[in-house]
Image (cartoon, rainbow, N blue to C red; front, side):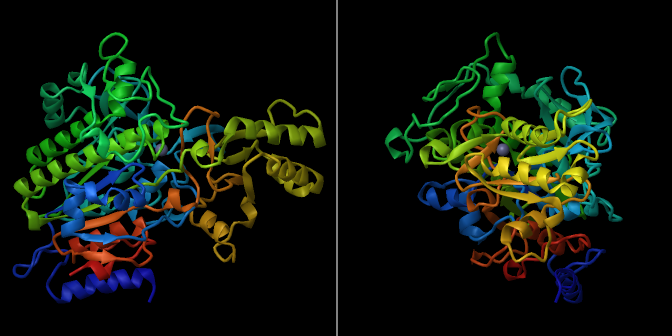
Length: 543
Ligand SMILES: [Zn+2]
């Protein structure tokens, strides 16, 4: 049975049992009133086991009362935030939903674009005016939230994060409240894609609960110091904005609630707690889950990723942030239990990607995108001489090499040029593979090529995809971050999937599943199908 027909069969099966149709049935168990998608950005699967004895908040609740998939992993190469969130939200792989990376080279526009930037959807700010705009228009298929909104008794949709590239794909093309934090404006924003004007409930929340109010707070350890597994001063830590590598970490600016303050705030447990309070206020104010409909709430907690990039996964900072995030999610679940009713909603917790170990701690290393650009440019200059008006290489990011218009066709037609480029790249310390766009195929016997195919988006994916050796990272500029992500290695691909609530059968499940299976599963519980999904309904965990 194909993935799609299996999903359809489950929906049909549930309809036959009167468990869920497009019209809510009168008797029997009702579909959940609210679907809750919680994403913890950069939450590696192994954290769940590593701190098993320390969870006592939301993660404890989900482990004890829910379904836990212990072998969940992304199937594609480009493990990045926007791609992950789009996969979680649509049940589709990047090859289908179109979000190849956080940023890519737009060959038509001849510029690098982000996965959400959209000048036609200007920002609507909850603080000072913020330039530019964002929307979900680059997503090629509808999300679960889009599908729920399109029903006759349409869902109310709320999606929140510090990052636009998380809140936007989790929602899709529309939604009642889709809000994220804009660093340049130091303000929460939405865009015209979602609202013509600030939403009154968000405005009122921000007026009484300001992000600036944490100024002067100090991030201290939640638990006794001798309970921490990781040392405070770790090799390779890259604290930013005036922080040092040691606790405590004050939430201070140079001059009040300035850029430095907000950088620190976003990397602290305080911003996670803030997002959770905003989410609870919106569930309350918009009465999510309290009508004869299935509403949708998504919250993507960003602090773990922002902090993880600076301190690495084996740092005391990440360890403590996780413990505090567990408590924050616990508080949010308690609020949802009270507002919606424990058995009336279903919640999924997962991550958009993991992270590599800090290379210096494990004998790995770093490759800088900017160096790669130069390596390729010089290789072609060596064969062809200097370029004309524009360099041969248009853009390199996340190990993706885009040539200027027409150049890659010339490279492919010129054996000497192709060899020179490949040889030069393979001579870069830490390089493992150079994948050429034309050899990327679903049918390949090579698992790395198949992973590249799952993430391949025609027109958007680069000409060359570079794969580092294990424990090596490809980053923007060398020595800037402790670590990053974006490969097919288990530390980047493996994430938790925890489900709990209406219709979920508790237990531990060890089958190979992916975060693309979450949206089809929640959709089936709500009685809708996702025709574009690549994932399947996790029937083993559905009652
Ligand atoms: Zn990241």
